[in-house]
Length: 242
Image 1 (cartoon, rainbow, N blue to C red):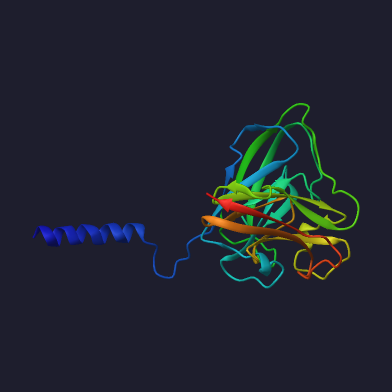
Image 2 (image 1 turned 90 degrees about the horizontal axis):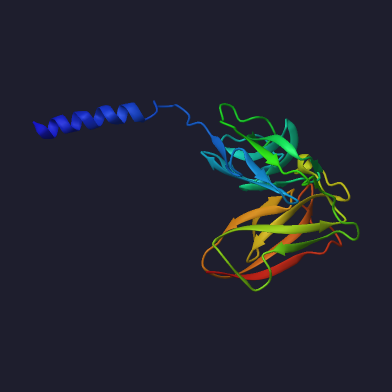
């Protein structure tokens, strides 16, 4: 009798927590850093997110919509400030080249491959404060197109989760043009781990998760249509994950 009663209780609980047959589980994005109402100084704001029930697919940006996959966009005070297909983005950048001291809203939203909003997806919004005397500006360096990995340093020890910082010259990161026809002097950059693509970015950062041991990180510029930028310099560093 007790066993039958326990079975009935369990069946009722499963009915309450399980979605009905055919129901779709909604996708969501949550800003985890910076914290709401944080005060930030320096030259860049790095926004870190976590995504649920959604696949971030960098090479499908600009392709036809496919349920459950795409990328995310970030907005500052309602203005477009970049895209990401991993879990970080930084600004100011080419899309939002300046950020003044004071209070600002930061919002992250999921997008389908074809740039349309993801129906029913939960967005995330926070407020941040840029410290007085910390006006932020972004301009890419002039010269022959190229990219250099600034963090981590070559032969350094790092944790399994890592945010990679780069510096770009002679090239404009065009967030809204990823996946479109090539246009001279603009596009995005790719991050590689041991020769395999690990992500793309149109800001100064990208993140990766690595296993213990030695790894080679590489960064290179790409045109909007994903082809290599002819004549552009690339960079690589070796790190050890502890």
